[in-house]
Image (tube, rainbow, N blue to C red):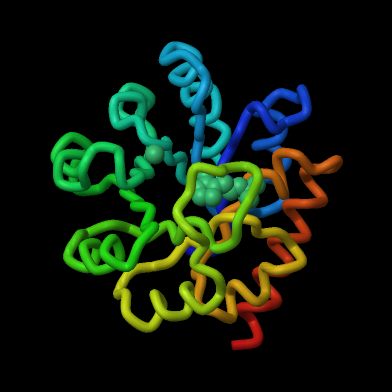
Length: 209
Ligand code: TZP
Ligand code: MG
């Protein structure tokens, strides 16, 4: 995983349709979309996934479903993102098959160690900074924690939590392979410009290395 990773939250889209925000972000060059619906019904969640799938597939961008292996399978999504209280990795892998992208959030050092032997596509380093978007988190890793995970883990790292164009560079410097954002795109006045700024930030940080 590499680039800007959009995690959606319909409730933060300021009344605008999620599909239009995702389309703006895709046009701006983001690398991945995770559909995250904490309040929608199963039916709505699935319909949203089915609606986004062709848009993302034609842009070559993977669609990842948060938490719900059943919805990922029903929608034919590319993968699933698992938290530490969701379905365990092994069970998700059995259901999703060997080609699926499976991402896993790590909130503690024990999570990072336990993930080392799993064939996950990436670790979600969660949260790097405290964020009002998700308050039921463990303590933030900070830049030091992110760097410590980078030094130890064999996995690609997707940083999440309080990230935006102002801090993306230091996040990449600390070892993130991808920068995941919710509010920095979903709640932006102009989601296209916000996503494009993040993509530029990412590209200019990684070019220099
Ligand atoms: N997981 C850890 S922090 C977070 C999630 C889903 C929310 C990140 O939101 P924002 O608005 O990018 O800080
Ligand atoms: Mg979860």
